[in-house]
Image: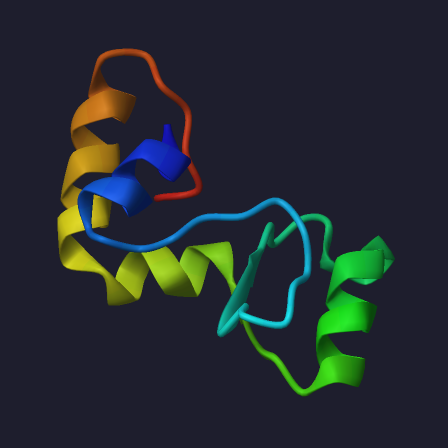
Length: 77
């Protein structure tokens, strides 16, 4: 669901660390054990937590709140 929301906002979404990656958005609950986080930091790629990314992108946050109200669980309070 979040991937589709990213595409709708013209954000390219990938599942791996690549040379063209500008920002890694990482699950708040999994950042401590993330090899992708380690790799991104070694490559100098910017990193943010999913909760911060959602709060900073109001259109995505609004859409996720709508989905959550119909049964979808999210990181939003």
